[in-house]
Amino acid sequence: MNSLTTEVGYVSLLKQGEELCGDRVETIVSSDSTTLVLADGLGSGVKANILSTLTSKILATMMASGMPVEECVSTIAKTLPICNVRKVAYSTFTVMQVNHNQEMTLVQFDNPAVILLRGGVSIDYPKEELLIDGKKVLKSVVAIKPNDIFLTMSDGALYAGVGKQYNYGWQRDNIVDYLEARYEPDWSAKMACTIIAEECDRLYGHAPGDDTTVAAIRIRRRQAVKLMIGPPEHPEDDNRVLELLLAGEAKRIVCGGTTSGLVARYLDRPLVPSIEYYDPEVPPTAKIEGIDLVTEGVITIGRVLRYAREYLADSDLSAQWSGRKDGASRIAQLLFEEATDIHFLVGRAMNPAHQNPDLPITMAIKMGLIEELAKLLEQMGKQVQVTYF
Image (cartoon, rainbow, N blue to C red; front, side, top):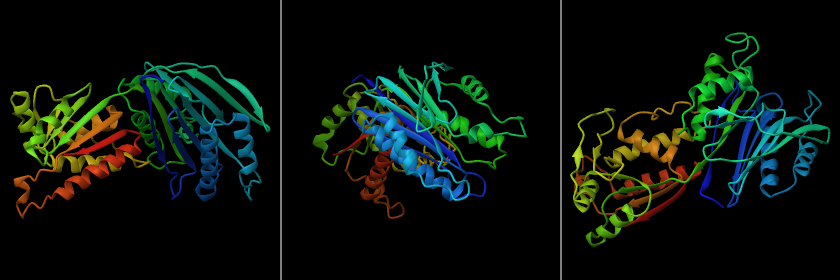
């Protein structure tokens, strides 16, 4: 094992008029591997959804169990139901599997070729052609490096813009050029997918002519983030909690006026409030030397929770918090994009300001916000710990 970890993200656009997506992404994460399968079922709607769901679940489960590629593909060929109209059982697929955070195994069948971005530039990788039950499958094994991004997509991405901006759609070379021109070193896996999906949506005139899915695995170094909200229930625990907040290598967020005052006194450094409202619905931030971000408490975390729900929506392209400077957006950037390991330090002291009957913010509400946010962050693939004091 090494200090690297994997980050997974994907975005899907549904074909106009369809309620079910014919593409499916399945991921399995274990202690020594991360497996992602993107399957694209024949046609669209219910039949395509069934084909892609079966393909992705079976392949992901078998590959994650360490079974040979030949056996996995052969099982798929024998399992898929036959389409009554076309008389074939068909789903294209791409498997991306990171093993021991050292190498990437790619298995590709009829999907657009995986793009590997390294340092913002697309690079070639070796491909071995296998013939399995009459299917031509490409297999690759690639040694990984920090910040590598592996992107796979369904062919809906290539059809974007047909007869409009492009005569033959948005070809893979066009997509590579688009990515290289816009590359940012701190892209998350989800953001890389969103960049492509947004452009596909635009090229389709916001009415996709085919299901379009983009999925990615990013290789990155671990980044710890600690977030403290609320002072401890017992004042004698103050120093213990603050020592925990400040220990080790991590980015640190402090939420709440009482909490930030406590931290400032402990550090013997001034708490400098800001009067800039970057968002009229989000209270302004403050600064304490040695703390990466200081914000208001419950209202700000409530907005972060809303952003987390939207972030996990398969078809969400908004990322309205990206690049913004208000407290909620900056917390979202740190937790969703930068963090791999997150530790919430939650104080249970009652805040006198919250006893106002016109502002019924209870301890249960605050703890509920943190608990739901923690669950959503775990769904994003983060390692999350919540400690109450």
